[in-house]
Amino acid sequence: MNNVARHVIRAAVFAAALGAAAAHAASIKISCVAVGQELEFCKATAEAWAKKTGNEVQVVTPPNDASERLALYQQVLSAGSDKIDVLQVDVIWPGLLGNHLLDLKPYTKGVEKDHFEGFIANNTNNGRLVAMPWFTNAGLLFYRKDLLQKHGQTVPVTWEDLSASAKKIQDAERAAGNDKMWGYVWQGRAYEGLTCDALEWVASYGGGSIVEPDGKVSIRNANAAKALQMAASWVGTISPTAVLNYAEEEARGVFQAGNAVYMRNWPYAWSLAQSDDSVIRGKVGVAVLPKGGADGRHAATLGGESLAVSKYSKHPAAAADLVMHMTSAAVQKDRALRGSFNPTIGALYQDPEILKANPFMGELYGTFTNAIARPTTVTGPRYNQVSNQFWNAAHEVLSGRSRPNDALMRLEGALNRLSRGGKWQ
Image: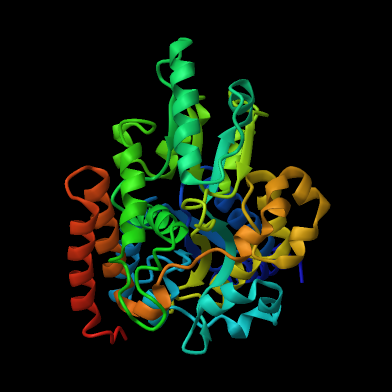
């Protein structure tokens, strides 16, 4: 055989090998939300997996608004579409989307036992593990350490303390020339974020969980009304009227620009506040959210995100492998160090590097493990309607269009109709 023939055969063998590799390579479409640094981190981790495995990834950016993102997912999944292989899902969605998601148990090799037990239970639908926990969340109070010290204030224990402290510092700073200063910023838009904030207020005053575990609608009570009235008193006084259209990033924008004393947000805001280009770097403290009066409790809504695989994916094994990579201990540690994303793996809360980068993760560990859940389990597929009714009622009170008692009476009626006599499922 001459050299030319050998080259031809080698080329043919090489081409065949390439063809086989191409045939086995998968192109996985993953949805990555763009709140804060999420998109950047998600994209980089997915691309690292693709490089390691020889597959391809395409990043799809869904709406940041959780309600809009859920609607998009429901539309895509209901159509049986393979437009998205890996979905970033909110902690409240496994029950809503579970029937459309792949059981990941055959792909986990048992690592789910390393994650918070409650989160794994949350992601289990009819015995199927439909999502792997990625990061956990709980509402936190961020505050300007320098401004509290300057004006002789301590970290507020109750919402009444916060209202007084925020007003005092806001007025003093404005008198000194900063007319953009506000006392408190939070999430007041009519969306799922307001459900999180308002549930914290209601629970902190002992006003229940909207719908109790036994299915009873409990939201119409004096403590819930008191909580909403307190929050409404902030609008236009210590909070800008524009807060009624704030989501997480709008609140963070005001706080990180140095124009707010206090902020309610999720842990991701910490690393951004501490970034090199942040004007408040080194000036921020983090604490538990205030109690509802002296007899109240500290209450933080449980949040967090998981990764799931659509059962309509053409490459389920590759998609599941990507999910296992992105939710691994190594990736969760990297995200905690660089982006202050709270891990869902308990052992990482003992990691000295993580605790040095995010002191609050150790100090407020109980806040994350004891966070209050939204009533997703009891209301099942109707949760989204329940939340929609709740956030709209809260928004009516905050905007001054309704009194608390009237709004809660209408909300109670709407939820009782939804429950069909307490039978949610």
